[in-house]
Length: 93
Image (cartoon, rainbow, N blue to C red; front, side):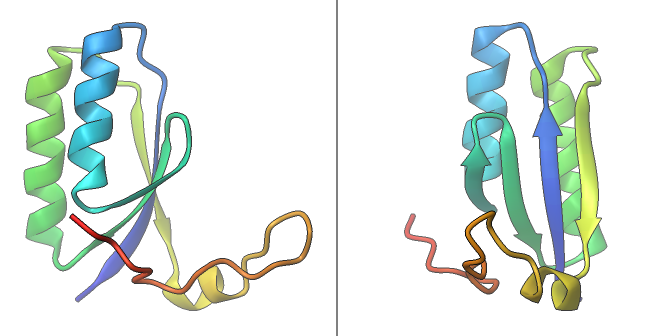
């Protein structure tokens, strides 16, 4: 089952921050400097992503995953009232 996530992090190490960002871009898009919206196809995919990020982080743990209800996200708006793009938006790799 597909699931949407908001992933936020605050990492002091520039290299780790860049690597985490590149990994997350494989699953979604950057909405702010260290905030990503991603879509995963299964719980197993989430576990694999977390494992890959843990190997990059080498002990740092300030990466947070917030589950986004797909129906609730459809009601999300920017400050100017514009609706957010529906999942999946176009992602070109």
